[in-house]
Length: 301
Ligand code: SF4
Image 1 (cartoon, rainbow, N blue to C red):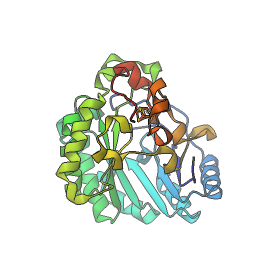
Image 2 (spheres, helix red, strand yellow; image 1 turned 180 degrees about the horizontal axis):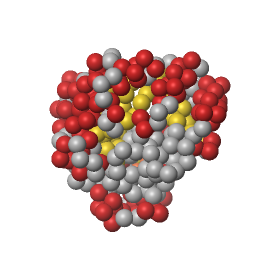
Image 3 (cartoon, rainbow, N blue to C red; image 1 turned 90 degrees about the horizontal axis):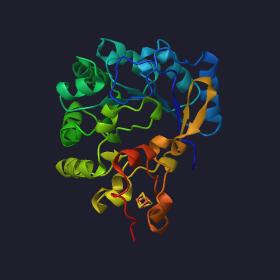
């Protein structure tokens, strides 16, 4: 990993959604103590990080989330990002408390361009409307807004509409995630059926970029699509996990660099050795190859 920039805390794995394929939710799972949180924040600062990412599970399930953010700011983190399904921000005053605690930005997890799609994938009736209300409150509180767009086989066609909707809400940029079946312990045919095929996602990515060409570079970051499946016009959207410089810290003090996560790829095919993108490529997810095979990936001369 190059310079450490971000520390992502996973304080625990509780969540008020039950999204298809989510392997992070665990209501009775381990939980970070105050001591662990302070230690992770201090160590991150000592190692050079100045950006804090509050993840999970759903971090707004923690009552100490404001204290965590304020502690981060006191220790010198200049940016504090809340990654959330947005439901708690629907409550009056919650977004304002986020801003007052020192949270600077909110990343909303979108799973569709309509309540029908989003609620179905999150398996929580009414959560899209709560998120939409939460976005409005966060905007009023002056927080910077962005979107994490989860793409599945059944919602890929909505990707351009998700970006359009997010922009109309005031979201400035979007990370595109492909649903993973990475957790083999919960192998589920319904999840595997929702792992989107990259060749079906790429046209939606292109359409989203073309529809919003006026917004320019930086609108989309595509986390899981290697260069060999993307047209040159989308190479500016490639995600470099190592350059991003993010350390994830989980309960129990277990920490790892994002670039080492199987979620980001890490697996290379024999032909990759001849590919000109190999030095900067994050590689492929093994779970993707197990579902869809290798035939989409060809080394680029
Ligand atoms: S290194 Fe392999 S996976 Fe990466 S872009 Fe090249 S062929 Fe595709």
